Image 1 (cartoon, rainbow, N blue to C red):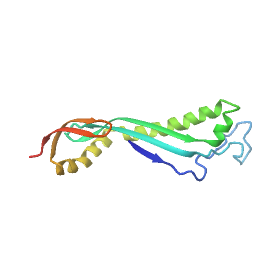
Image 2 (cartoon, rainbow, N blue to C red):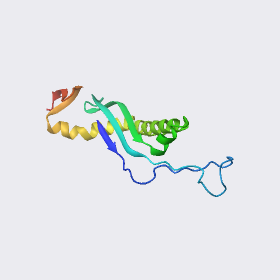
Image 3 (cartoon, one colour):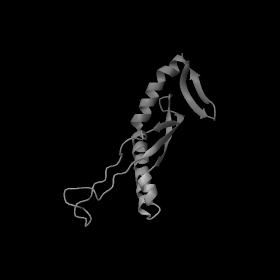
Image 4 (cartoon, rainbow, N blue to C red):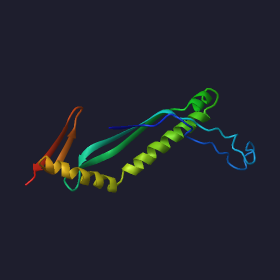
Length: 144
């Protein structure tokens, strides 16, 4: 599991008023609030599996994002819209990361990067990979 922590300073999302809306003021975006994101943490779980070329790569990609949105948390007390915005932001982050990692290219790249380390450890063709709470077991044929 990988954890990514994002910085807390500055505004992460700039509100831009969509033209033509009755509340949009010409030449200004003051009617669309900027959104601050704090304590952002992204958890990425890549479960190890054996690859088609007898190395180790990852299977299913699981991503979970948590963050505080002070303005939206305050607004949620008076409207359901901020909760919808928070969920949309979270879903967009999770989906983008999942799509970036969940490709044959990334799986082959990881398998290729791990192969020299496996060779140095005398691990030839990887047949199975088992992950438990505190260990990784690799079923394999030795290198020749």
